[in-house]
Image (cartoon, rainbow, N blue to C red):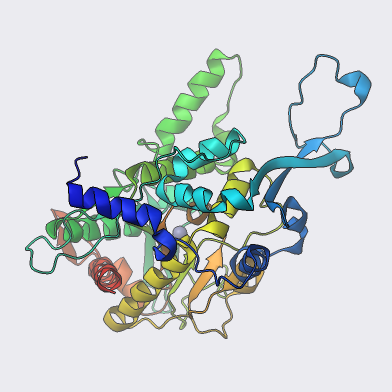
Length: 444
Ligand SMILES: [Zn+2]
């Protein structure tokens, strides 16, 4: 990357006088950092009190703890601790410091985790502290180029179409489908993986047409982020295990997915996004009415909602990745910026799709159980893997309930031609709403 002298001076001035730059929580100079960050923990991060002893905010700084097994002196001769295993009973665990960030290193750590979270995570894992010599240049905020025929030139957007089923049968195994027989006897079925994928494909075209660079985490609606179908992934796994002398049976296909490959898929999605260093990320899903389980009938309810990171629950600070992201979310404004972005997307959904935002008083069971309400109606902090692992500004969007009596008719209809494939027009409308939301956020 080449910078002119003026740009270099600008970068330097941001570096030197960056107190009000975007990306850092605004701290009143009268408030102590302890008080400020303790409040922030309560506001966005702590859903369950039980995780409270995994971190400390004290006079000396911020400390993250890990749990290690207590081993008898006589067992440790030459043996290295293997860390916590599922077999380790809780009374045989002790806490030790995983990372301590002293207050005097706060500002440089903050700048580094905003500018280069991948490198900061490596540093965290090595228990190192940032030094003054580190490259903390942050990508400048994107501005829409109003007088350009490519107003989004230079913008990077990551799109993550949720799930991975390639057929309704697979979607049933993945438990992400709609299959409902209406009162008139008509049976309607479709699945979320395909809806989400085409939503992202259409949205990507719209963004690219305005000059943006777009990355999707999956290549086709039937592919995982691991760039093959789950059938291929499972077949390879069987072969590998066979070489190691282990036989994997076909019945193990879906238990293995939920135990192993769903997680691997999330990691692959987040890695692709984080490597791309997008200005914005949309994690694209379609919802069902949480109060309509087991979803064998339609619902009259229909609401949109969006999730941002935060709301750590019981056992959700159990791994280094969890604790690093907890620290990142505590120190950056990723949550606030994601809330601002999500608000614009929800507004566009309401005006273009006529789907109202989930009201504060609602009957969706997971809201109370897993979420922390933000200042914005319909936007909730929730510790979803993708929301936690993806760095920067994001919107995890759930635009409507698929089994709503009206939506189900629209989503089951393949009434739009997308490059020779028939897809529901409703999906195109959803993509249009997202495009409007993105533009509104960028222009703010
Ligand atoms: Zn979903």
